[in-house]
Length: 307
Image (cartoon, rainbow, N blue to C red; front, side):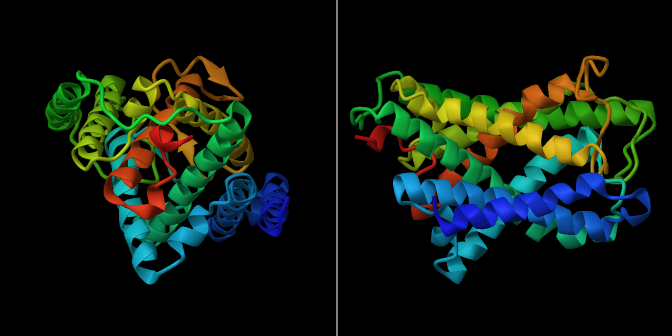
């Protein structure tokens, strides 16, 4: 392998030490350090794999210029607003018990910047392995006749789904006891999970249309043209990362899940539906990243360019 990969392994082993932390040492400062170690370990391990197999590096591409870094952070903030805005602020599906509002705000930009880099890198590493094992595919450059109409229809559906779902969620809050913004403490009111899923799907549909309108590849285009590596990579990467990440978090509770549907069905003491929903935020961020960047995100889908 290479130095990047082995550096990642070292960081990962250090991040595992949080599992053995005595309760008296658990604080937001300590947990933030361990969270950084874990995130950067996955970034380096994944980047090392893609460097080795496909001779590409997302980390190097982003760090190539201040403009690329700023652009990625801007996309990451948008992704953070989508993820936490829908699932935490509105959905109340988890809380950060060690954070108050000001600490949460302080780490929002760098935290999501590193988090989304980890998500993208883990996906690209998985896809590099799958592409290597499957030996790629034939080049497909054109759209099927049904695709232009479908992407436009998806865009319209997404534009309708997002505001309607937000309105329904807020209406439900006000019918109960009113909405309270709180990232630290759980609320008793359980939001209709259908609205949360509808917003994520609506966002994905809009991004699919934007990718199409900007003449870029997309997850659906990969699937339509019989390139399944993208979808398979999302499912594998999200499953593996979810298991590792949640396992490290269980003893310390840096974040705690609340108000999930079918909460009595659990895996490792965590809601099963949470694990099933993990691929959704991969899909949304990767689509967001591809839709609004150029060379940095060339390798995100690219099924139609693999020979």
